[in-house]
Image (cartoon, rainbow, N blue to C red):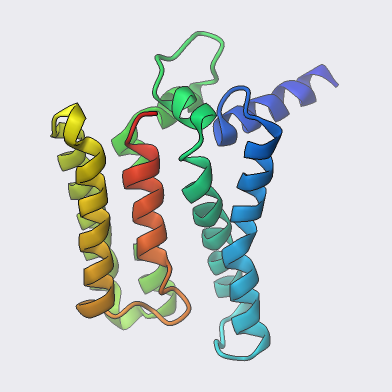
Length: 190
């Protein structure tokens, strides 16, 4: 039982940081359900005709990104990911504390275009490359300009998503939510 509790505590720390408030946890859970609820609406109304595999991918992305967009803004999460590693932290925490690696794991634009609109897969790589480039530029900018720089990058992404690269139907939310989650929520310290 102690090992199960230890595993659950580790998972909670990786998601919410150390010592999140009950309200933090509730907000994280609510935010993780918002996008999947709307995706279910599209599915039930037959506005999308996705395979079971596509549905699972879409729901997982919505769950992770909707939840992560809010959770990454929390004091407890920022404190956990912007502190030095300790011996008591699991190896995965040390890996996820590396911001560019953490962001690099989020290949969602490639997956969306690859599985939902493969003829436009190049757009997935463009969005992914832009995300990495923005993250690098933000990290290399002076500390006092990182927050406004991250917001500027999100603004650019929203404008491109709205006027230049048409999003995949059902994933209009993907780029704004992904970029806010990672560029503002993950990169910017407390």
